Amino acid sequence: MRRFFGWVLSDNRGGPWGSGGDEGGGDGGSGGGPRNPWGQGPRRRRPGKTGEVTSLDDFLKKSRDRFGGRFPFGGGRPYWLYGLIAFALLWILFTSIHRIGPQERGVVTTFGYYSGTMQPGIGFSWPSPIGRVQVIDVENIRTITIPDNSGSENLILTGDQNVIDLAYSVRWNIIEPRLFAFQIAEPEGTIREVAESAMRAVVSRVSLDEAIGAGRAEIEQNVEQAMQQILNDYGSGIRIQGVAISQSVPPAAVNEAFLQVSAAQQQAQSDLNNARSYALQITAQAQGSAAAFEKVLAEYRLAPEVTRRRMYYETMERILSRVDTTIVEAPGVTPYLPLPELRRNPPAAQPQPQAGQQR
Image (cartoon, rainbow, N blue to C red; front, top):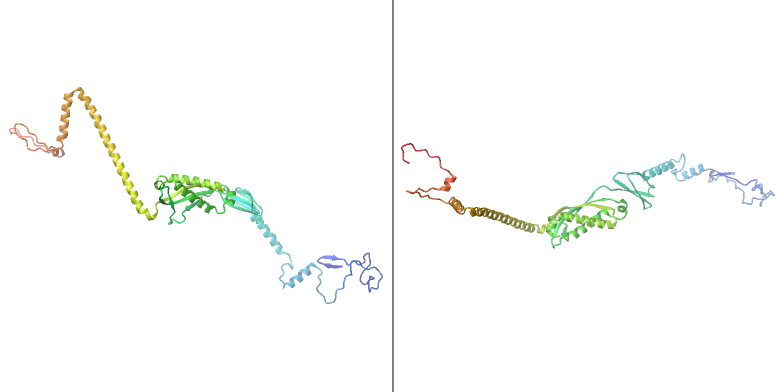
């Protein structure tokens, strides 16, 4: 019998066909018994030959010696196997258990195909690379500014064939993680291009004055609706939260001339407002005079002579109050009496004449 790799091999000695070797009766043998039908018997070990191994330990020892004593599997306990098992367990642990935050969702893929969406909490999946989880923040509001550089121009043609320099920002978030992860390769680039397309389409239908002045709010609303419609058609899983125009001015090359035109328009509008105010004032005065005349007419019909005399006194009072007046009384002439100056600067009180003096 012979031991090789821990197994016991039989030489079939004493088998049903007799023993082989020296006891058998083969060619050149001395015995007359039948020979082993399965082949020749075991050969004897030649003196000085050491290549045979009798156990697994001897095999590992000779293999280690053959590699200069650096063969990793020889001798002692297999610590490398324990390390490999520990590494595999840690790999499975860290790639199979996932923590999803309150504002996040996890898109799960198995062999690269979508298999589900993880809700907030602790979730499990197949270990990597069989399964993967992409964590997506669905409540964070992201902002895209157009143009990217604050000093660059973004020229857009208006509906009245004018050019305007427009800067604006787009706010958006994710509402469907599965669509967001698989439908669009570059979400921010797609949103930027959709925003530029929608803005140019909306501005091309308004005038320059509307784009610069009171029409900006309507432009923002129309751009938001157009962007949402396009992104829904793409199946992007994105919601547009708002569009805000931060700058709406003419190009720098014509800005000075535009300011002059704007100043002239404002001056014309101011003059028009003054004219309308003056017209309203004159109209009110005329209406007041007509009402007063109607009242005088009613009094005149009741007492014509009295009314005529009162109108005469009022008219003379109004006329004489604006001119220098000389009053002549009999028997002599009174010196010049400046009534308007006396009204503005009344004279000081004159001393009373004493008894016996002539006035």
